[in-house]
Amino acid sequence: MARPDHATRQAQPSPVDRAGGGQPLVTLENLTFGYPGGETILEDLDLRVRQGEFLALLGPSGCGKTTIMNLVAGFVRPRQGTVVFDGAPLRGINTRVGYMTQGDTLLPWRTVAKNVQLPLEIRATPRARANQLVDSYLGMLHLSDARDRFPSELSGGMKRRALLARSLIYEPAMLLMDEPFAALDAQLREALHRELLSTVAQLRQTVMFVTHDISESILLADRVIVLGTQPAGILAEVVIPFGADRDLAEIRLSNEYLGLERKVRDLLRQ
Amino acid sequence: MTTTNRLAAEPTAVGASERRPVPRKRRESGLTNTRLWLWRIFLVVAFVVCWELASGRIVSELMVSRPTAVAERLWTWITDGTLGEHILVTAQATGLGFALGAGAGMLVGYITASFRRFGDVVEPAMTALYTMPRLALAPLFILWFGLGMQFRVIFASVIVFFLVYFNTHFGVKDVKGELIAAVRLMGASRREVAIKVVIPSALVWVAAGFKLSVPYALIGVVVGEMLASDQGLGYLLQRSANQFNASGTFATIITLLVIALLLDFILTRLTGRFLGWRSKGALNPL
Ligand SMILES: Nc1ncnc2c1ncn2[C@@H]1O[C@H](COP(=O)(O)OP(=O)(O)O)[C@@H](O)[C@H]1O
Ligand SMILES: [Mg+2]
Image 1 (cartoon, chains in turn orange, red):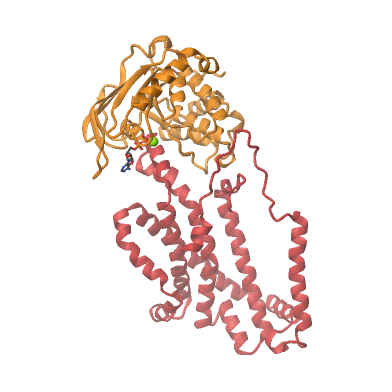
Image 2 (tube, chains in turn cyan, yellow):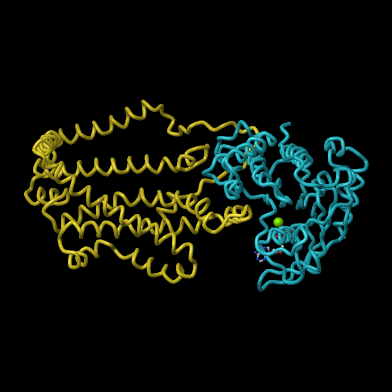
């Protein structure tokens, strides 16, 4: 697999202890949130995502997972408490994160390559450097052959990969993913899980991943935070010991995985 | 606005499986291209032949003339320069009226959609003006601008203005908030959001507004010429009809038809350069 020249762009702990140490990259402290005029959705939430870890937020639909992501992205402001990002309280939109949602936010009038290049245009990256980055990210996500296609000419999986490339190309400190594969069939989702894990391992990317799918959270994350409903609070935290270069097919059949799944399922049932 | 809505409907993406092939060019009529064109030409030829045969037998030639007489009239007008002269006058007014109306329509539409509060204040007035039959404005405009070219240009531009205005306004408003949020997160300023997202996204609608309003610009000018002018195709039409000259009337109508088709063709080619992506993929409506 093509390895981008900036693969080790962040000074981070080795992948082995990525769930362990590491400086907190984002900290939500005593955070309370409700939409204007609405009831409280999050109350006294404390949450920390460490540098280099893959954190999954797991919870039932409507419990406030997307809201947490929007807080970290700076699209909404907390009623009380703060979002501290990389040591400083967040003000305005957080341009240091990449954000991939379930929606299709590729610009339909731009080709795949031009879509992936968009963040670099906005950041005024020099032409030569930009072209080089686009090539390496398209290569990494197996999109080189589709570079000149328009989004309407892509399959669902290709769109997901193009969105992933676009979210990563500007080297965000953290990648936010809000049920990014929810609309895909099981087989395709499995392929994309593998692709995501290898990309994240290569880039040592910090990820905050939202899902309501128990197995997805266990298969991907280093740590799963289980959320309850209304106002949302943390029910439990489960450390997943599989490490960065895990083999998904193998894990899925292991007793360890089955035990974790049962444990999380019980937690959610409370 | 049902017409424009339909014309500018967003292309819908359909969740497809990973192995979906690259879609081929659509051929849904079930006819090969050559056959399709042969049938189309046949239809026109059949119509002309029926017209020729019916004229003087079933319908009075005084009313419908006949294709050969119309062709003769057209040929005379082309060779003696009459047609060229009148076409030039009409084309100038149409082009100018379209450019003015479309330019103003895009500008105002962009502003009312971008600045919500201002738009909320202005919108009802715009809708009221739009629903008013614009032909009724003609006498007022004659009063203001006299009988010359100026009147026709302004009359046409007012008609074009509203069509382009509404398409631009709704086009800009229709831009998916999701797209804007995504680009904002990449660090885009307000200006960059406009250039990279809002304008290209609204362009589909604006182009639909253009396509819709070109024939109206022509109609506006021709009606203006019919009402008050001694030049242009509208004048030629009016004069021929007043003189019970059916061949002249039909010759002018056919000329107008050709001009309208030509304008539509040019516009489609021009906007196609920017909207090429719309025809890619299997499921786009346009
Ligand atoms: N823009 C909004 N305005 C008001 N209420 C909202 C808005 N977005 C979400 N909510 C409410 O906030 C709660 C949490 O929503 P959300 O964060 O989207 O949940 P999840 O992503 O976990 O499904 C839900 O009850 C939802 O109805
Ligand atoms: Mg959600």
